[in-house]
Image 1 (tube, rainbow, N blue to C red):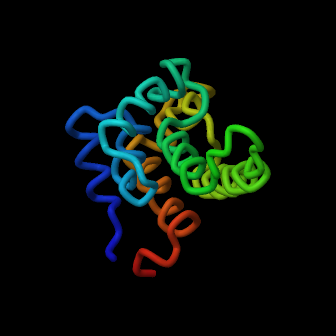
Image 2: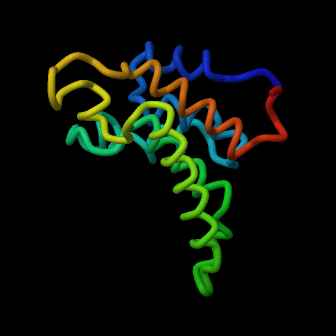
Length: 141
């Protein structure tokens, strides 16, 4: 299958926040509807609630990691360790590529004020990571 990064970019242009753009683009592979992914990631936009914290695109990817790894066992949850490890890999690789995981830094609001990494690049990076880390056997390399 070819990359879906262009589809995520189109969703972002339609008004989806960065988290929604990423999560909704791959929600079918994670077993949820687009509406559910859209609703579940709405508050993650603009660095979580507009607080310019963790990048929304990255948050969308981490949301997908949870869906991909959690066993959903309410009585005896046993997949947290795997979910945390996968999330940590996403965060580390995102930071290596973009220099930070924080929206405020990525937008250039700390320091000189220029946009260091614009949202479309963050979305593209998050999509690359989703395809490489979460669904490596699904997408063309």
